[in-house]
Image (cartoon, rainbow, N blue to C red; front, top):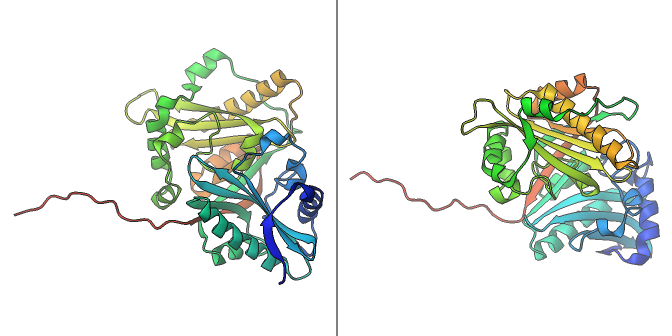
Length: 343
């Protein structure tokens, strides 16, 4: 292949919008990450219609150019607080060359991202069109799967809860002081290999309800275009493990579905959490006036059952199963420690 990878320019926007649009369709020579969304997908075609303030200085957009024609694009979001990059879009169009185009884009990102100080690279994709094989060939490790559940806009949302009902259920807004209990909650419901790879810190849990990206999900990029709120459910017994669940609600400001994410212990009241979250989305939509109702998306990891069944009982249906992959650009070493000695 004689083409080259370079950073996108403002003059490329029209061509990239068309490339992104074509790649999201059932096109024989097109390849994408295959993330399913009702309505506009997570793509340049839809995101370029959003306010320019939605794009941040650390975001990167690479293109593959061959004979003055753009046949591939890769869009990356940078989390500067954690030195991580997330591949949001990877598209290519070409007769027989789309796989090689995407591989060259990924390799360029890994080299460029490492120079920019990125320690981890994340991506979520459907297991189609050679997506998983492509990233594993580039050194990514597959560490989990998520089931994406969708509740369509045709179903009316339940009414919002009153203050007394919220208090009686032990639900309240998340606070920075919840960082340590949230870390314990995450450690108790997450397999140790996954927790080791994601490597969250207390500072990450303190940012709940602002620009939060933890716990990570395949739909984290849409949180940039939503008003995110975080709530916790407290156990009546209290104690060290006083928090039984974390609920994240993202109300879309643009033409994207709303977002519902639950992380819970087995003792949590999942039915109440789901009903409260959907009612809160309804209240925010009605208060906003012009907030669109494009349905609600809820990501559930495979080890979080029976949360998926509780969501299905609330009107959600299975949309797709996506694979989570990550590549670390640093080598983990064991921390030095003192051990007792017997004489």
